[in-house]
Image (cartoon, rainbow, N blue to C red; front, side):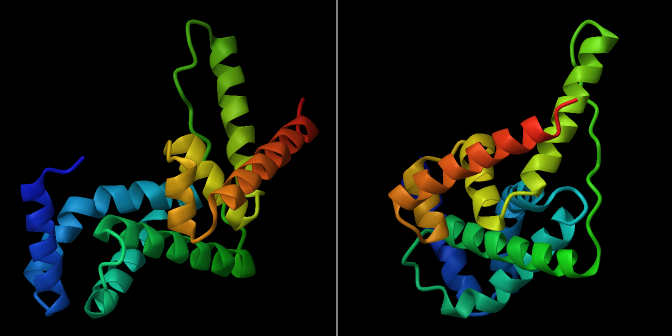
Length: 183
């Protein structure tokens, strides 16, 4: 939970940025760039994350005068990032299928275990990439970022029931995709 002073400082920065103050917006970018990049990385993967994060922040700057404050600044920025990610995914799908980077992780005490974990991670990343953008978003926001159903619903502009249904369908689809690709 943010302290009242931090909230007031953020509100002041937002108001200054809305009036065109680049330094104020720069401070907001400095505060939230890691959050934006992390969300982009989870939604589109490493190949497009930097582009999505940069474009999302540019879109936020251009849209600042229209920010009404109905939601918190961070919620608004998340929404812009999600929309930008979806746009980039559609664009990438039309041009070139983005390659997924295989990430090796420390799988444990044996090389066999490390290989199994790397294989499972690779299969899971590939399966998540095959989900629809809506399903991918709820899986990433819930299972990776740990958001509540209420937060997901608010972020995506859907009801909590719809968020739960999408999550259930996405997990069912993931399970089927993983079983389909099982060695």
